[in-house]
Image 1 (cartoon, rainbow, N blue to C red):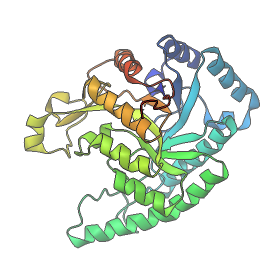
Image 2: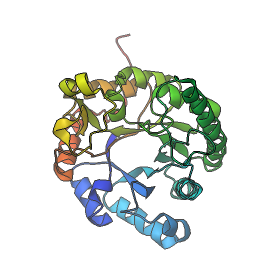
Image 3: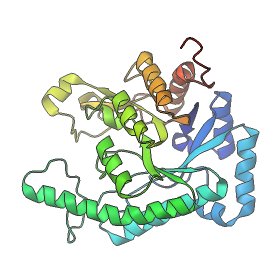
Image 4: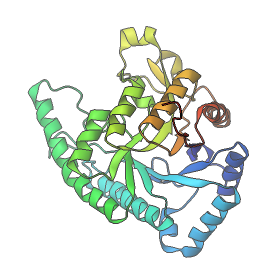
Length: 321
């Protein structure tokens, strides 16, 4: 288990500069955007797929700073009712899987996507309650759309021996652990979670219980280290389905925080311990989206905390048992 960083907040730096900065902080892994919302700040997906020299340059940069790639990231909506937008997202995801195979990375992080509520609708529809009945019907339709798409995508991932790690996210069909397991049951074991606790905190989900649940199915393929602070006073009147803009931090029921600023170090020790219990030994990839800190300060404080709590060595024999 090691500390990693999704490099999107460092997109204004060159790849070499970003890698050097993170290596100096003791980071062991990087998660690199290759399409969708993360963009392609530190690699060009199309170029790397076709150009061996570009792939060699990436490997040289990684070797120079003793870094590995924990995952390629392309977060978008391949189930979008707009065919052009869905096709673009699908191409990004399929090519990310192909590139991960070529680079021997092994994991791609993404979203499940979200369809419309019916075949004639024009915008995605996040259904969060089964009544009135047309909402339950819409949700059933969405799962039919998602199953057709993800079964084919999962076969593509299996052919390339790449794990697809889906971030459970609001405004996506899969936004909590039971939905994650449902999609996995409908596809194959290449489909699993990019476990990001930040979206689960405000839903009232107990993080270590969710880790145990998904871990029991070997369904955690990657982990995002991102925190959330819920403000009870606002939540008591506004609830947690909060439409207040993210940058209006004083008025929101919850905001994303740097690791340790939503929940304390003991909590993160428990997360790391539970991940070890279920057999996860990959990166804790920090995703910085804290409106109260700069990218550098938020990353540095998160890295410092995680380095104190992460397990770097394998456990020894239980000689006392």
